[in-house]
Amino acid sequence: MSIWARVNKFLSSVSTDAFSGVVEAVRTVFEGQPEVRKQVGFSIAMIALSAKMAKADGVVTVDEVKAFQQLFAIPAREQQNVARLYNLAKQDVAGYHAYVKQVKNLFPDNDVIYQDVMDGLFHIAKADGLIHENEMLFMDDVAGIFDLSDHDYSRMKMRHVDNENADPYLILDADPHWDYEKLKKHYINLVRENHPDKLIAHGVPEEFVAIANNRLSSINNAWDIIDAERQPQAVENA
Image 1 (cartoon, rainbow, N blue to C red):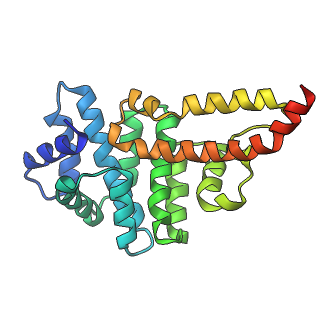
Image 2 (image 1 turned 60 degrees about the vertical axis):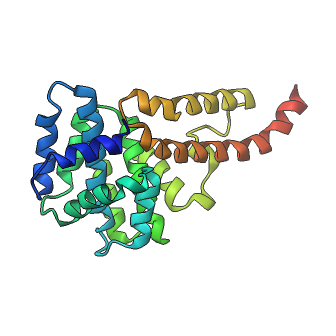
Image 3 (image 1 turned 60 degrees about the horizontal axis):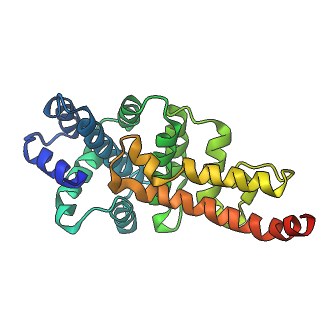
């Protein structure tokens, strides 16, 4: 059963119209099913954070809603139910900190998951062609709650905010003074660490792998630039 079918089935059993009630119900409905509870809890937290972030600039645009639907691979038959949850989250008076902490509780000390969440939020924020100042403040705050290092968060912002001028070595967190073979080995390790299968192995629903695919694409693009610059040198010195 897909995660959205699970969410739909779950919502049909929940009578509350308050988003906080939906979150609370996850704990009880899936008692005794820790993996399902983790997946549904993560999905609902991501819906809430996406809605809260999109609203940070004062208005949720059509482009942001479409970006959310595309990024999380929501089938047409499930979009109405997810939209209901998305709208409940927009109207919820609770702050977004509770949902960030929910992700932390589901995946304690897992920077890979936290970065996936941040990448998804960045993708939605820039869907309308501009990341608003308030959206960036939202991102900064969420990164702080996740305890992401300044180094990792700066690299992430570079990928999303200034990707055209991004230094490929910084994207890969690599030293330009490394020789070609060390750079290549580092790149291969990054691909392995950021593969979508690893995301799923951590307990994230497979419908969310587009987040990992986007980051992996950025890593591959950075490597292509470095490879084009350094490959001839490596061959010449062989």
